[in-house]
Amino acid sequence: MYTGIQHLHSFLTYLVILGLALSIIAALVGHFSGKPFTDRDRKLALTGLIPAHLQWMVGLLLYFFSPMGFSSLSGQAMSNSLLRLYTVEHPVMMILAVVLITIGFARAKRLDDSKKQFLNIWVFYLIGLVFILSRIPWAAWP
Ligand code: HEM
Image (cartoon, rainbow, N blue to C red):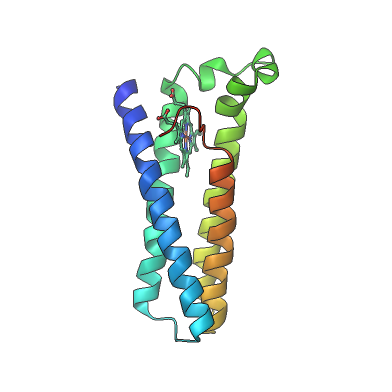
């Protein structure tokens, strides 16, 4: 069970990064070309949102199965940079990233101005992607 969830979490990371990169590029093109925000653009933004949502739920599950997750959370873990990354920094930054991505998508849905819709997508998604890339355990992935 643990290995299965770990592999799924590792694989989903590719989809998260690809989906966000695609959404950001499409929104940047839309923003600077001045074209209207259509349903196709909303669906493109979903390619960034959906894998990120799936990933944080799988991550939360993994947190309770992994020996480097909840079971390692202690005061002592805070003085070990690798354990601190897995038990605190990684989960917190990833959840913050997904919250930002969700805010960007929700704001774009509510707005009427196409330029602002594209802007909200690429700015929030880009900050989310930076948060994600900053706390991926690069020593273990890919
Ligand atoms: C967009 C969100 C996330 C991304 C892109 C992401 C990405 C990753 C990556 C690439 C790894 C290393 C996988 C490997 O060793 O092959 C990892 C490990 C881990 N992640 Fe995440 N993660 C995300 C969210 C979360 C969340 C929200 C939690 C917990 C609440 C979490 C908990 C963990 C744990 C405990 C591990 C260590 C697993 C182990 O090897 O035992 N992740 N994550």
